[in-house]
Image (cartoon, rainbow, N blue to C red; front, side, top):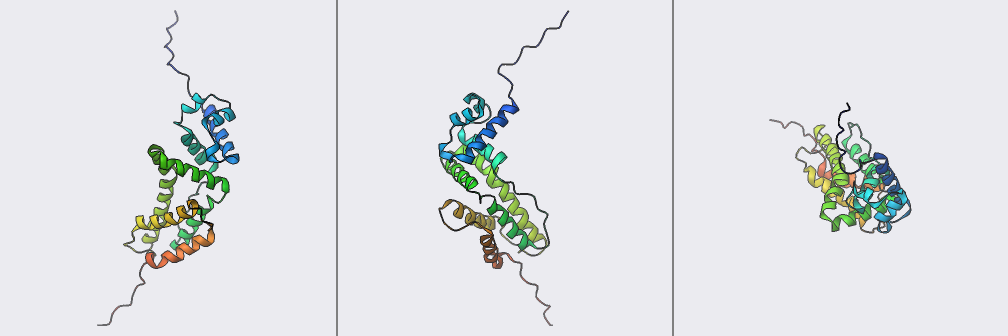
Length: 208
């Protein structure tokens, strides 16, 4: 006598292969189209899936584009071992950050996603968590290491310094400025910040 089978749960199981096809299709569109010309319909057509397949994983265009952008397009900032030169570490991190958006495709997509984040508070939290918060964590690691080895001020306001450096990054990325986000700008920022963040030089013992 055969045992009764359990009823199959409603709905089809999610297919990771389908999800990957959607991300691949979205990434391909990002290589050829501006953000405003991409739609759920175009992504579905490119991936050869129904729109409902996309909505199984993502709430809308901004969500799926953000996923494709971070998983397929955006260069990762590789982890770095701290050195005994905290100023060099900060300069190197800024260079990597700026290089990550140097490709026109990456820059255009970032601009589109950030514009979307201003209109959709829920998406803004996702965008911040995926892109902004991760870089902020790396900033903190660099600055706190500089404090730990005595090159940066012990009373350094880490959060404010990160805001200032991020402000310079986002301004040049989004304002339409023709100034580059390049190695020279990274070096200039570190030079300008140095008087504010460098630990005071030890003084000699006073004579009695």
